[in-house]
Image (cartoon, rainbow, N blue to C red; front, side, top):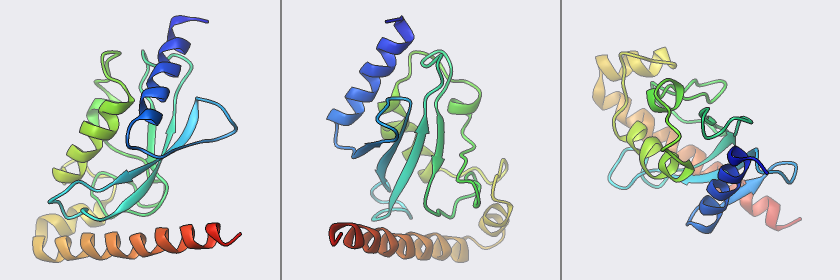
Length: 160
């Protein structure tokens, strides 16, 4: 087993042993979903998102691909694809980082400190710059709507 695959396995296992719910796709360690909760004392507090993670063969030397599966209203998250605009993942990734960094530091920082000057969601960025109160309310509404959706999805799965 090569060094990148050992590291990938170790990082995925660390994530699984932490407080995150990890759901593998196709029984492998290269694609999986992680249940991510909005940071406390943020507009996203109480929200729950499913984050899709894809690890390239060269991980940790190449960054993981991260995307929101369910909707989130944020200037740096593409509304349709869920892709994330985050420099530390897209441009300045280092093998010193691991998957726990993504979920414990990078994503919470993204939600706490949106960057309207580098948007993937132009509507959210524009609203954030023009009317912060309305932007904040829209974030809270989206968060609440999709929290209800996630609850409903879990209830439907448990009845099968």
